Length: 104
Image (cartoon, rainbow, N blue to C red; front, side, top):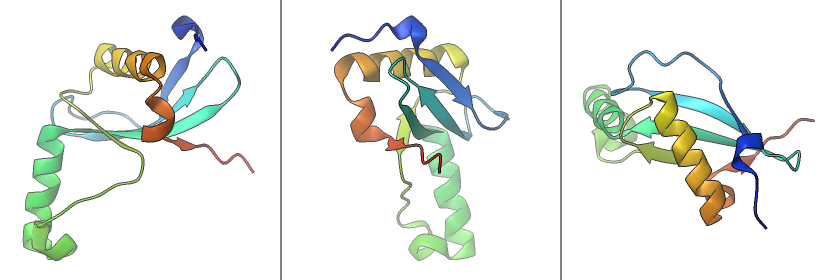
């Protein structure tokens, strides 16, 4: 099924403080009415989180990290996120890498 990518919508749920070292929750609204949730992390942000966990003791002192519906990107610029979402929709990977939005 081909989706008109111009009709999909990406809504960021909080402000991005750093496009290079941050993460952001988002909702992807598809033309079918389906909504998917995803969290975008930059590579640098994963490193920062694991270093912080090393000092706090979380996640076996930073030896691992996991997140539900995680997509890793090089940066959090809007143009990058839009392109990633479009590619994931086109390739059929969005449903595997994201979760359904529970609107109940």
